[in-house]
Length: 238
Ligand code: ADP
Ligand code: MG
Image (cartoon, rainbow, N blue to C red; front, side, top):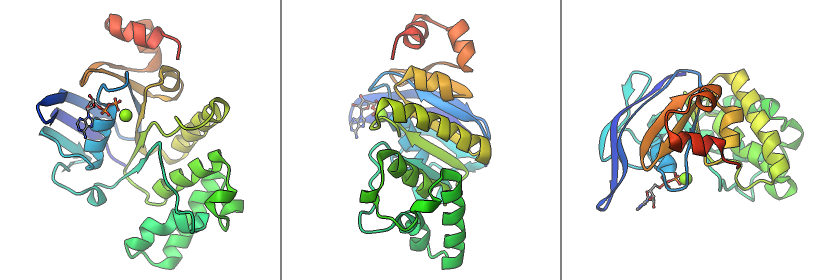
């Protein structure tokens, strides 16, 4: 595990600046939720941590490694997206192990990791099935399984639940939290849903317009919002 440290981070697309000199500390082992309205730069920030997007300037470190110039595969992170695509012609086990196989890990080690992740996620009975035979929640768990088997230092989630129905979303929130209790992997979780943020986070980062408005524990933000934006955002119905 490792902390993520972000210093003076900027991102410009063409002439448009979308991240404005952002500083942020994601402590080792914490579950940190980035929240804010659509377009405020949450995905851009996450993608820069992942290495899927270049930084315009500033520094991103994972543990004591400056990762700015490392490709995603060398950052020791695993990302779960909203629009995860499973391989339709591979079993659950093969879907979960595929990235490891591509990296040349031996089969016995892959099997061990896939079985362990399946157990954690309640997927053991489904390992030989194909994605089409799974429910939405089970598919989401397979997507998480692909991240878990890599045993990364940092998990990055970008609105992983937004395609699920409301009931399943509530259940998956609890499951992802339980997973974090077990693995204690440093997690950066993006959502635009303040209820999701309030119920899941150790610490919430409220963003607006490419800037951090406030960082604090859920109750802290609720009791002592730093400004009217935070108060309105946290207090508004989802
Ligand atoms: P969020 O995830 O908070 O909804 P994003 O990080 O996706 O916000 O987007 C932040 C801003 O950057 C938005 O104004 C968006 O239009 C812009 N943006 C994101 N990706 C690109 C891109 N590839 N090219 C140009 N502009 C982009
Ligand atoms: Mg986004």
